Length: 195
Image 1 (cartoon, rainbow, N blue to C red):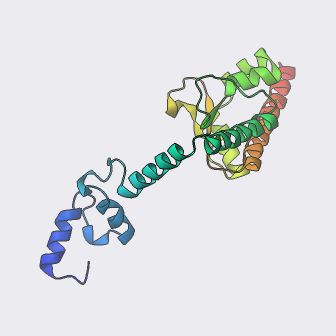
Image 2: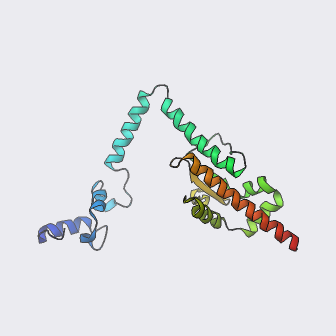
Image 3: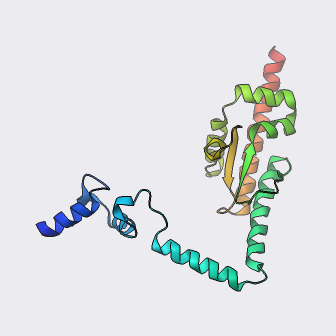
């Protein structure tokens, strides 16, 4: 843009002025993204053309797979990932007939209660910050879990997407969560002895 004539620069500045106060500084890739939809609505725009084409291809593929073999295989992979996480954590996979199994919510209170009982769960709820758990998992596994509160859940929880990692990575998340629980339990028993 810097090499364009004044008239061309003015047109581009007008075009990208809703994105930034310095349109000349916008990276090429960011202009491509903005141009794939209405520039003024870049921050709230819906699906871009490439995404729409991809959705059409997915829909066509689904219609051609009359036995739903691919869909069944994908569901199986996602459920195996979920099972790996909870197996390493040491608790049963929660069952929910309405779950899409695209993600899982690890309920901090219920997990604490299942692992070490009611008193421990009450202690965890009073003495542990759920955000500490999220940072711990990120440090140990390189995987960022999100707080459940961002997804309409009231209880302290960690949300993991089951769609984008390998099974061994979900096992590592489960191991990290279990270490956190075991260390919290050791802290709890030590505090209980002091009283």
